[in-house]
Amino acid sequence: MSKSKSGKQKQQKLKARLPRGFADRLPADLNAVNRMMATISAVYERYGFEPVETPFIEYTDALGKFLPDQDRPNEGVFSFQDDDEQWLSLRYDLTAPLARFVAEHNQDVPRPYRSYRSGWVFRNEKPGPGRFRQFMQFDADTVGAGTAAADAEICMMASDTLEALGIPRGDYVIRINNRKVLDGVMECIGLAGDEYAISRLTVLRAIDKLDRLGVDGVRALLGEGREDESGAVTPGAGLDNSAIDAVLAYVGSKQNSDAETIAGIRTTVEGSETGMAGCDELAEIAKLVDAAGFGDGRVIIDPSVVRGLEYYTGPVFEAELTFEVPNEKGQPVVFGSVGGGGRYDGLVGRFRGEDVPATGFSIGVSRLASALKLTGRLSGGSDQGPVVVSVMDRDRTADYMALAAQLRDAGIRAEIYVGDAGMKAQFKYADRRNAPCVVIQGEDELQAGKLQIKDLVEGRRQAAAIADHAEWQESRPGQFEIDEGDLVSAVADLLKRQAEDAT
Image (cartoon, rainbow, N blue to C red):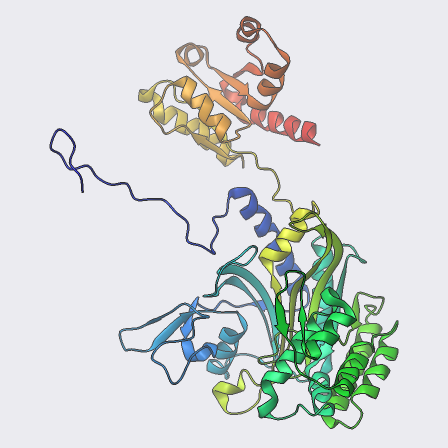
């Protein structure tokens, strides 16, 4: 630490910096997301789901993210050791903690158990554009129901949720596939068995890129690999031509109706008992969705849906926004997925030694909020600040407190200026707070039983129209006098006028 000329040590400043992959959130964004979350909650509760909250931290093995042959957890999670040398981790998603909760409280929760949860999840991964280490999810799950009705209901609820958030029909679709169908395809091309796990993953990743790369791009990834525009090569799955044709036939089985699509899928998994069972489940879901009135294009069967398949055991779902937005290069692209889920009958069973049927859906709150903001559908309401009661005489602070309390008691946001600056700085502060008005009472107003109300919104408007500074000072734009007893009604009328003018 260096010394100044006076001999005193000069204290070094700590650099204020935000960790990579994290974000500060400002009032406008917080208000908008809170409104959005309240809307989602209302839809979920309308379907009979109830809230539950699990902690941010779980034992690492409960999350399924650990390396048993090493002394530290997987780098994909933020972890630390407790004083009893047990590994703990920040939750990676909201599903694994729910599985732990249901297993631990098995005797206390009703079956089926229908719950929803929202909160932050954490990924210890390399951050990038649109890729954060902390982000919010909103999940709904049904545990203890193995019927297709539970899966169909989740998809219908996802549809209703997007519409409640202001996304019209035609701008979104809920797509459904089945893990068993995908397993059946793998069996038919000779990739069943643990020894082919990596090859299966490569095939599934290729299928998942159909929308972006088209049939030719997927064909290349199923074969020897693909070279992109930059010259970078993505290794392929190394399938022979007959296997590639079989996978592409499966991908191309999407037709105009769910019945035709399922019939097409059946031809591609013929000979696989697992695959045919998956088709039967899709047919049952399609029937239920159609009977409930959602078979009008809102919820569809789509063989290209893959999802992350680490623990899915049956139907998988994807909520996709179909409207176009500009990418970083200004090119129009479909916004894409904002949520998904599926059936995970083995996850709760890790704690109980038996499979427990479960199905669920997760909304990526941050990503969906970005989509709503891009289309002007995300509103946090007014960003107007509170009424500011100025303090002209420090000895009368209690009187100013009483004025602010009157406003608050009437349901009006209000604060007194608690700093130590003069009137000019107080008005600057009120402007920075986006206050609708300032309440002023000096000695003259006190003796007369009056108050001055400075309408900051009108003042800014009038000031912009007055070119001459002397005229501006003389006109005192946007300021008027009222009786002290009329404070609440005068401010309420002013706020009403401002709201009407804003629309």
